[in-house]
Image: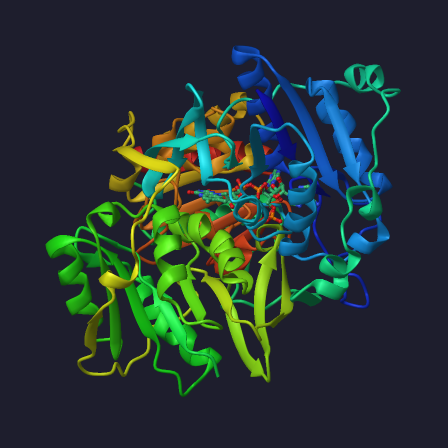
Length: 262
Length: 328
Ligand SMILES: Cc1cc2nc3c(=O)[nH]c(=O)nc-3n(C[C@H](O)[C@H](O)[C@H](O)COP(=O)(O)OP(=O)(O)OC[C@H]3O[C@@H](n4cnc5c(N)ncnc54)[C@H](O)[C@@H]3O)c2cc1C
Ligand SMILES: Nc1ncnc2c1ncn2[C@@H]1O[C@H](COP(=O)(O)O)[C@@H](O)[C@H]1O
């Protein structure tokens, strides 16, 4: 099975406090720790596990800039066979539809039987996978939390409300958006990354792929982010500002008063 | 202004809470709008849903077909492409069905997709102005959307308060004959219900809930010790389950359990909406987080900025001390 995994590099929210820049038009990006979008890492692990069972190759693709190459190397260190960086100034400012348009062109040029995306990107809208499937006219399943390969089709489970699972059969080729927790992504050390450091990564541009720049990027985007802000939602908590000991005493008193000591 | 529709999710004959929220969202797009509900399904369940929707929508489009007995997004997408007028605005709740349906539908309708909307500010000409969140709710963004060729919009559950005044009795229009033959390349087989775990967190009045901030499996014991001292149970956010540190039955949130405790101690939990959606009954929420900007502090009653790995054991000791004093 030839599997393509779409991945994106994002600021790691568990490592960073996301703050606004002084102009309010972006988050403060200096000193941010970036990593692969969490969902996409699960998608790569799933692809590797499928290939381990039925054979084939895993390619990881990202639409981005030079800096985004690091996530491709990381996933290659995990075991992905190929990495591809689709990169062109014309792609800047693409909305979800623009990204899906670029990825669809790339998929059509390749041998892929199965395309995996993450459910959502930290700074995205859970949209690229479903759009990509529709552009390719492939069947789609979102929120996938298990995959079994059958003959010419897959048996997949989707996560629905309350931790219940919806089991479906889906014809290949298809697009799946992968949910966290589907597997336990393997660990990647610095050594592994060094081992793949010299493998060339192709970087096709808009013209290499035959993409009309007018159909992607800022110009074609119908959805545009204007600014970033931090809203004052609700009343906000009463913050305990004392020393740790004082805070503990106060908290104990409050919790007891609310019936928290049984 | 384009005609506004709301796709209504339902189960066993009962419309989802989003049914009334989507009316409120439609009115934010166009105060004069009288949105049309669309429901698909079959049999008595579908009729029951149509009849309840008549109290909040002036028109209800019913699409009945046996193949739609289970809401398969691929089939429903095909049905909607057949019945929706060009340039329509379609609203649907941002949950497991909407996430499955909406992005692909927007491509097939050649309209704009706007995801997980929290606030609708209004429309200027063909520009819809909305507010979304990124990075698990740590920041919000103002977003402008060109809706000149229509839009598919997913709306965050709970973000829009249902209107007080509902229109009286709407009419049901049967659109079933317009959908033609639907063939799916993804076929629904069955639903597997979540397993009950060792502890039923929905029955506890005090929960010590841990998130990714607990950092590793061995640290779960720190929370368990506090829970034991308080007479509480340990629950958690999703990453703790994903990492297999606790069973799925301990997870609070949209894809986990809905809990109704009196006191909820959120330790190392950032406060993503999918987590908060599982906390009902207006409990007293305590947030312990080392990031003073964590969104959880906006919904908590009491907040403490501290390292939970140090704070929780000291708190546990204090609770134990107090217990021994009061036992004497
Ligand atoms: C379809 C879908 C369904 C979902 N369903 C659910 C669901 O049912 N339940 C759920 O919980 N999530 C769910 N999620 C995931 C959700 O969006 C968030 O990713 C998740 O809730 C984040 O969990 P967290 O707060 O533990 O982790 P994070 O967001 O990573 O936050 C960790 C927090 O811990 C703090 N911290 C770190 N170290 C320490 C320390 N030593 N001391 C104190 N604080 C510390 C950090 O400051 C941070 O605020 C769902 C997502 C999707 C897409
Ligand atoms: N720039 C990108 N390059 C490749 N894949 C992407 C990109 N952006 C998003 N994706 C994929 O689409 C998924 C959903 O992202 P989003 O729709 O932006 O929330 C991600 O988890 C990735 O798999």
